[in-house]
Structure formats: structure tokens, C-alpha cells
Length: 308
Length: 317
Image (cartoon, rainbow over all chains, first blue to last red; front, top):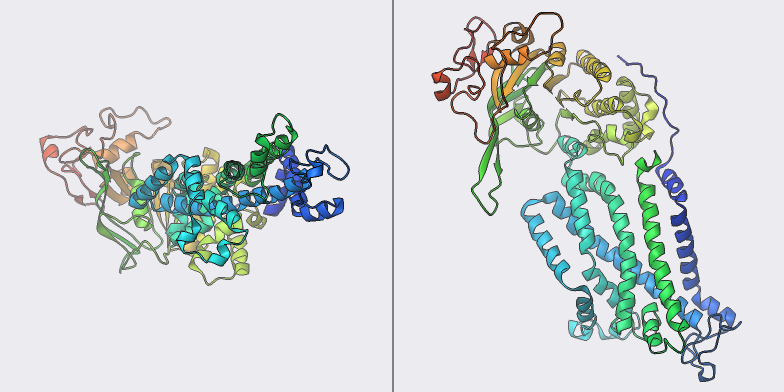
């Protein structure tokens, strides 16, 4: 009963191979990726670089305030003689980690809310989406400031942990994640709604598939594309939030440097030492643009139809 | 002998609107439909758009619970979960296959959901069934977008076949395909039935296809069964005016002009407010006062095997 069809198929290709090939052809995304990788390596190696140059990032040297770029201080020194380059790299660590972790945490929560909402519909959907609307209608910056100002010792957390230097880091990750999940929740819901009524989900249901099976096997892979794009945009936005909060003094507190609080220090000196404001500002700009370009490249790479 | 599928007095109603403002309206998609399908038999379900064919198909395949009535498969009620020897083939072959999955995984999915079959065996069976439907075995490592509409429909048929179903609900499986491809897929469906004795509920609005494939035909109008008959009886001696109207609407070559006064005029009425009495009386060429008042039951036509829901069944031209 075999029906003869003369059919030539394209050569088989592993999924990740094909995705990588599509990504590679996106030149801007590749450039941005290389930039981000170099930045991440430099930030990770901040201490090594400091040792190699023979500078101590926290050492104050009042005889070397505002010194111009030299072989020892490649980008010069700030108002109390600290090396600007090494401080920028230390700050980059925090900015990049906050960007990734807060996006991952908030994104996971947003996807959970959105997929459950879209898949179950009805009352659950109405409740979860009105909740999302409520969070969305709060003004973000004041909300972040209020959350950033919460006295953690009143929440019954162990005192020993509260005194450790990582507190302000984790606090800002959680604060941003608490606020910035709404966009991802809405995108997940909309995408879930459009996928769940497609016939392949119905076919799986007719074969006896459970809801969990349909969500993991069909819904999540099919909503990944808009989520990756939204996630990349979120990383960029979170880096800006972190900078904003640190700039306003509610984020990571000095002397731990971040791009945001380096801007705070620099704003008073903008006329006399503009370079101190330009360096972190340019880094924030380049990083956010690069993250968005990578997101666009990943979107193209994950879409099998972009081949044709 | 119990039939393979026994649909008894099934109705499906959808409440519409009325969430916060205004009264709820009830859409009667399917009203009091009963039919049976024997093992290995093809029952075609025909009707215009909006007649409830697809909804009825969903009820039979367990995707939707009927508002009232029952569906039994080999004497047991169909539930919405659990193992089912019923599979589906859809109209749109582009929406029927998950674009993120390899064809091999798509075809083997019913086995994966049922469980108890190893990955290697699933691959093996998927490639065997793909060659059976006329695709190369290497198709398992390709994505759906690498295939044409007709090839995708073959993949969908392979997925329906892999779990050895006894009944396949095919919801207009040809209407999204090019005419030249339609006949190939139609022959494939017919071949499969002859070699594997699978029963079909074949939903279609194409009477030409139905005439080629069906053993029996059920005619649906506004969610109600108008007539159910063997293929030969239905095409040669239709006893319901609506069936006659459908048959007259078939384009013909070289057999003279259509008979005047036999076709149905106008549009199918809204299922939100179906006409009183016989739902077809608004378009029926021979409607009388009785038709507007009394609902005709689906009863045997004298001297024949078919059932028709018409006050004047059998007395037509």
C-alpha cells in the first residue's frame, strides 16, 4: 500500500547546530555577543587585572586624585584616587549578575503566572491577570525605592546574614524580580492562549495527554521565542533599574562599586571631571544595547522558519 | 453485537456572553444526535458550515463532554482522559503538527503519552509507519516546515495510525489540500481502511469525496440529524428535502440543467435561535404549516433502510 512519492529531503541537522548557524549569520548579534563575553571575562578577572597593574581598587590615595590616564591607571583615578578601570570592572560584575539573576527569577515567576493563566482560562485567568494589572499599575521607581528601603532586620532574617556584604546584592535582585515580572507574564499568557488552541495540542489531548504534558512538551517550546526576546529586553531594563536604584542610593551601597553608584559620585563633578560620569554611562548604554541585539539574534536562531 | 461506537441522544450547548452584562444566550451546536458506527465501517458526516460537524467530532473523540447524552466505545463510556483507541486527523495540516518537534517525535507522540515503549522502539515504529503512508523513513529527523501540505497530512495520518486505533475521526482532512493532492490522500485513507479494518468518522462537506469513501452517510443540519442512510440509498434515493437540496448543489457535467425548486435558498439560520418545528422549514421547498409547529422525528422511511427526520419522508419525487 506504499504510495510512491519522489521526494528529496534536506540533509538532517541537529537542532542546536541549525540554531547556531542561524545565529552566526546575524552579524550585529555576533558582535554584541563577543562584546558581552569580553566584558564578562574582564569583570570576572577584575582582581587579576588589578594585581597585574599593581593597583588596589579600594585604596584611597589623596595625592593621586583625578589623575589622567597613565600606564598604571589606564582610565585615570576618581575623586579620592581610586583606579577607575578596576572599579568599573567590579561594578560590571554586580550590574551583569543583577541583570541575569533578577531576570531569571522574575521571568520564572512571570512564565508560571502567564502559562497557568492562559492554560486554565476562566476564573483563575481573570484573578491572576487582574493581580498582574495591579502590579503593573504601580509606579515602578517609587515602588522599587519603597521595597529597597524595607528594614530587613524587622523581617526576622538571621542577623549574621544581614551583616554580610552580599545582602544588598541579593536584596536588589529580589526587589527588581518582585516588580519586573508583569511583562513576561502577559506575553506568556498571550502566547499560551494562541498555542493551546492549535490542533497539535488537541491531538495530544485526544491521545490522553495530561495538562502538564501539554504545557511542557507543546506550550513551553512554542512560546519560547517571544519569551527569549522579552527576557533579553528585561535584562537590559533590569541593568537600568539597578543603576537607577544605586544612583538614588537604595541599591548597592558604597564602597562596593556599581555603575549606578559610580554615577552618583560623578554627578557632582560633571563639570570638573566629566570622564568619571562618561565611563559608567557609556558602559550601561553599550551593555543594554548589546543585550538587546543578542536577544534579537536568539529570536532569529530559534525560529526554524527564518531559514527560508 | 455491540457496535464499535454508540452515540446516544448527544446534545452540546454553549452558553454565550452574559458574563457581567446582559442575559446569557445558548448556542445549540448539536441537538439530540444518535448514531452508531460498526467496526471497520466508514460513516460520513456531511453538512454545511456551522452545522455542528466539528463539535460532534470533538465529542466522539473525547475532546469535549456532551451537555447531555452519552458516547460509548465498545460498550464503555468515553472519558476525557486515559487511553483511547480513537485518534484524530485535522483539517489544517499546518496547525496539526508541532513546529518545534521532529517529525519522528510527532508521529510517535501517542506512544510516548501512553508510555511503556522505549525511545528506540518509538523511532523504529515511527519510521515504519511513515513509509506506510508514503514518506521516506528519514523524515523522522526533519521538521514539519520542510514538508508540503499533503505530506504533512500524511504525517498526521501516520500519527493517528501508530497507536493501532480502531476508530479515526477525520475532520475535513482533505479540504485544506490542493485538488491534485486530495485524491492521493483520499486513496491513502481508503487503502488504510481496507488493509487495517479501521473505522472512520469522516467529516466532510464534499459529497464527491463522501461518495467515493463512505459506507453510510449522516446528514447534519443546524446540529440535528436530517437523514442517515447507506451511501447508495442516500445518493440514489434521498428521502429528506435537505439531502435532495445538497445533492442538487453538486456541480455536474453534461447531465442537463439542475431541477428548479429543489435547491435550498438563503443561509443556514443562527443556532442561537433555531426555527420552530422542523429546523429546515425556512429553506425547505415543500414546507407546510405542520413543519413550523411540530419537530419531525428521525424515523425509518417505509420500505427502505434509511432514517429521515421529515414529516413527508419517502413521499417526495
